Image (spheres, rainbow, N blue to C red):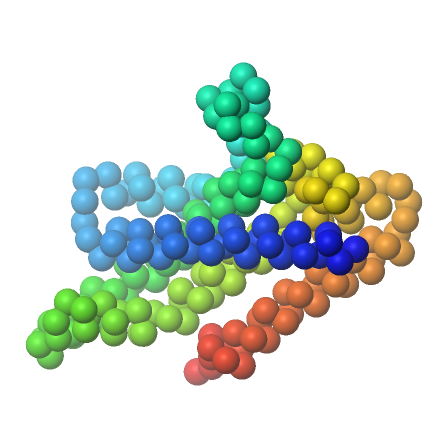
Length: 210
């Protein structure tokens, strides 16, 4: 049980960290600047925010399959494949939220900084500081999606005992076997983890403070 919980946290936190490293800079740049195809970029990003996890999992599986474009990597049914799937699932969520926040407030902040004579680095720092709450909410939203995901990780991971079994896939398996007590217990653990993460943000980061 501890290994299942640990693997779930490893996969979710790693995928969110990678997705944040990609989405935050991209969301800031695309939100602040106009470029050809920005409307299309916005629509595609928002569309992928609601992509069904099983569809994404199937696409990743086909790419990683033996005859797929990335089959030579031989990472099907591994933790790496699960991280890839969850990262691709979380990127649009974090990117879309940050893009929307920067588009709505970023230019006003930049103009204010320019008026006050701030340098580029100072402007960037102030921008991040002012939008910190929105960025962290975007990240925690992505974490909530990752830790609760079942479809994509089930397809690419295979729910292999002691290797790729996570809390969500284990809950589904136990529920299908009629072991409802185990499913409920693990569901409570899953909810507790989410509450703990939100509590840490509330106490130390001040995401929900006025």
